[in-house]
Length: 264
Image (cartoon, rainbow, N blue to C red; front, top):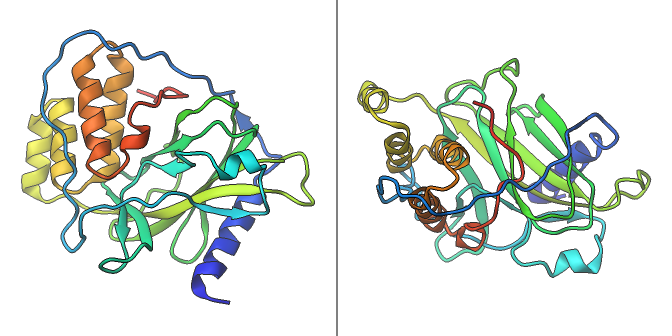
């Protein structure tokens, strides 16, 4: 079996083992009006050295056939992570990003899928479980955030980890589960002294821009997401968010609401 399909096979199995576990509270859309003024910075992501510009192809993987309505949904289930072409002019992409955090935060767009359960899994290079969780979802569409708990084994600097997020369309049928999922990689990197100094001296919005300019996707996104949730009436923050997502080809979900709040 080719490596790609072996990988998708263990992803779907990993997600399915989570079905029936404990859930976090039911998610609901957080209102986000846009009226107040703020400081505009102009947000754009610069890929890490050696990577081309991000591109985006629709869709993830699946196991079983979810209802027909799921197959035609656009935009589909997505990770808020850059997708890079594996080769020039290739439609194959790797969804991946850098983090500086020991316990980073992940974001996913969930379309209006007729499902009640979702699952997240994070594994190391040896396929060892680092973190797994279930979520109770509704048929409302929006952006879900998953924060690794502080007691999760910290990501090691220089190592790459594989994550997967799936929506179970028929969670009540454990014999023939149907899953739509997306998967990708996260690598922890260590900032140099210059970058550390810049971040220490900057305000949160400036920090988000600095992260983006240095290819640190996960912290750029999480910092900006937290600002949007704490200042929901700042229209400039909304614009910065849209610019950041557009810079990696995620403009189709740039206006979607958050479904759960980030911890402080």
